[in-house]
Image 1: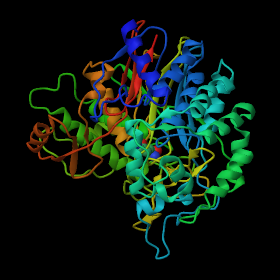
Image 2: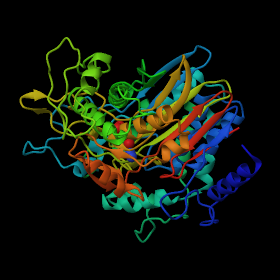
Image 3: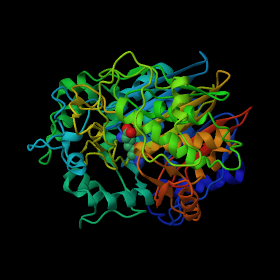
Image 4: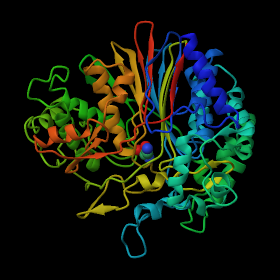
Length: 578
Ligand code: DON
């Protein structure tokens, strides 16, 4: 990093860390988009959604910490400064590249449904599925959080620095205070529309005494969070899963509206699962990500596998890449809706990424005409089709971070409490997730079960797609994003930008998004080029409209001796390295 860039960053960070210097040096201007250039470094790098989280990770890496150490420091800080998106009360999927072993693995810290849950969990007294927002708010949507245990396990496996040291920056900042960012302030206003201030602890923390949302630049301290982290620093996560914090959560989810029925046994039973990453051979690369219960890697993999039948770098005069992407996306989302769920509970076809199957799906695409919406296919499978397709559900919170350390270890992690501010239930300084609304509300359709229906102890299907791309067995790219089920398309588009179009991470992240999750209307990111894109797509029969498509992509490209990082201009994040 150049000296001038370091100095500029130092100014931003100093202003953020000390309440009282409110407006002049926010990471984002008051417009929604803050233009950024790629950041380069040689030895290590971290990119997250908030400058203070990036700084916490950077300091750990500079002190000789591993990627796992930095991930712990980043997550603990994100839970404080971006509390609407992720934290101790949520779940995380994390890919880890272990340089010494030359091994890529993945960790599933997804929330679980309580033991009392059954497929009718989201049906009201009249037998109909409840409304989405009516389900979100209150304790019933809360699954057992996995993020604390995941952090402890990766630290135990790959950590170099003491656990307590990694929690210290977040403890200090929680006690000293930080400034509410523009994004967080906007999120509080939006959260109020969905009853954030109806829950006493959240109301006391995010609203002023007169009941108004705390504004951008206001100082915020979180002594409860500091106390929680001190407990975890001293005792590990035992208090969270078998001690006082578990008891506090079990009590807090018994809210007046939508009481939850999590038990201490649900907490004691929670396990982080190490899983084999799901990988697709794509051109000269292996694109690897998170398998079930996430639909992320399989759906990103299907999109890329279908598109591998075209040379996207040189598509030909009459071939519109956006059109091909939309059609591939429709086909992949059709399979996702039918087949994908927690494979520890439901049978899934083994052949979802089978090259011959994806070739047969690609053959359904007409480069000159839109197909409307797609039907699911018949991937190679030794079962007859068991399930009915499920409808998609809205999703809004979440954060993605990427880390490369000086030893060559790497992390790509997506972390969430689901919607912005999760269930709204706040306990011991952090918010509890509403991840159980990621299950299908309808348990069955056409007399067949829906794969992603609620079941006791099951993990809701996710779209999170933390990704590590390998080339000749070595990592080349780390990437991921928030955005609910749009995550899949944000990640697939950025992969195409970098791997096929040769863009650097920042350029690929900045490209306007085009999203279609198998509907008859495509979303085109609003902005200067949107109308022209919509008109171009109309020529091949695609109906499209402009939309606010708010990704939070963070990426690091690994070159020969150079790390190049990018942070999404649509959020307030930062890449930083040395
Ligand atoms: O697991 C999932 O796919 C969702 N709960 C993630 C939600 C999300 O990304 C919202 N982002 N803005």
